[in-house]
Image 1 (tube, one colour):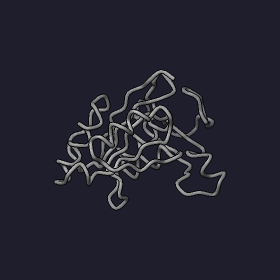
Image 2 (spheres, helix red, strand yellow):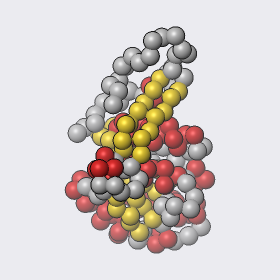
Image 3 (cartoon, helix red, strand yellow):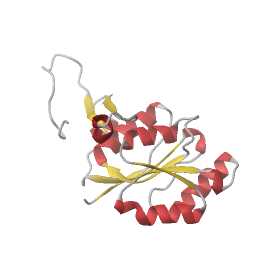
Length: 173
């Protein structure tokens, strides 16, 4: 893992910013399970990889680029689910939300269930979860919850490459 501002290389190449997560979902990789990935994002200086955030965690709301305006990360789950359902032309019952299975998400899970959406809980793999929410054919429409800030930045770079935008908000640990 690189720390913010760490210098890499010998200075002879073009200037760029790098964000790296050697293994997103280390536990999945250790157990031979799917969705563990190594990720690297590179941007021009002062690009998305340069984002400096305070706090270890980030609230996130991710969805497919074709789902209209970016969801508001601070909005209630029901609001974001209804917005995705409207964009898809379906009922909230047809929306699937991926959430990291953590105690901190108990009330979020209850809110998503109350809104009528389906839930796919994942044990690890915040970046893979965000990418699933951004791609067609995965069965995932939306990622909600709090995950690691480095993973949020890398996921934001990936979603930007897919033509989307990711709202996020840094949180205290």
